[in-house]
Length: 264
View 1 (tube, rainbow, N blue to C red):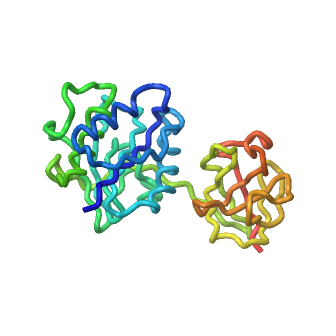
View 2: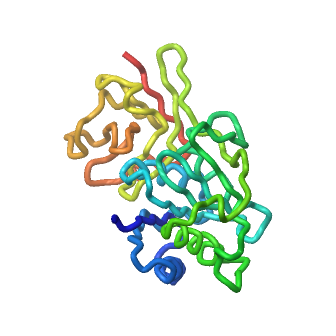
């Protein structure tokens, strides 16, 4: 029997013991769990960044993987801790929009789950760590719930079913007069500017512009001769990059900045 996989995505960083404490709780419940760190470098309290980064990694995992996502500005408040089951995995997180890109939501702040999905408000304290801290639900609620899920406990045994989850509208590019206008939605570790324009929406000879800098055509590799290039990255989105450098620093650009593509 395969060992259960539990992934962790947080904004906790690694200079403190937060992540280690969560792993300790999971392994204390199920020593056979395989824990995978997706990232702990999400900018603090940046729910939208976490939602995007997590969604890009999700297709790499088996459909029975348990995913713990903790970017939780409202920890200890009235926001719900939830467990969600879908065709692509089990998700344990605060109900604050972290599944927006997974669900690919549009103009809504409350998304009714599609067919094949179910969500539960995690209320059964038998599956929590005690005593409960109001400031560290990652350790005291989400980690132990993941541990019990990895042992085969069904999420419906951990709380009451809910029909919808909180989401934010996923930003989408707008097409007008032969131009597709989008935004930078993520800056990766290399300073590449990831846009919300998908690679299958543009041709290889399209002209991409950002900060009044036109880029003629898409490159196929990062080590091109151009000082500034556009490329479809591994996430499937158009990126702006600088070979051996940082496009974010070169352009003084970041999340929210406009990117346009003149379609051929």
